[in-house]
Image (cartoon, rainbow, N blue to C red; front, side, top):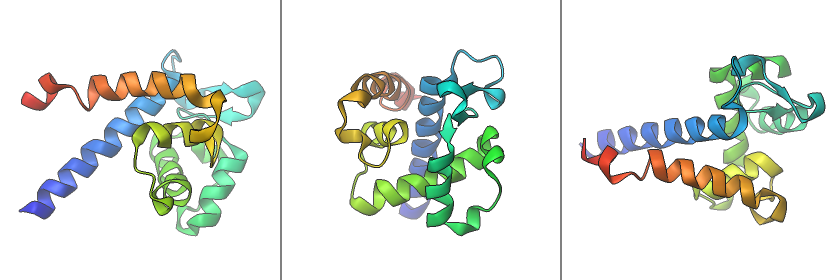
Length: 138
């Protein structure tokens, strides 16, 4: 019973995490899968850069694929999970805002001033969708 509840909570947690990331990255895009940002350095709905993808695939070679696959939601989420495992979860960082800042600004991104505003934006979304008492009561 507890295992089922845990799995449901984790699915909800990751779904909310990905939703909030995508809103921070490409919410205004008509087709987020075709989004290109940072002067052409970032692609897809989560704006993943080549070095980010390389880090994730090096950490978990089971991801496979090619960098261009980061234009898809499902593949990008595998890449992000591996990156977060490597640079957040394996280091004891479980705070979703810190993880979002790592996504935005690299392995130590949660310590960088450049990611503070991104963290605020993510935090507002997180509290709206994951920690909203009204949503939890339904």
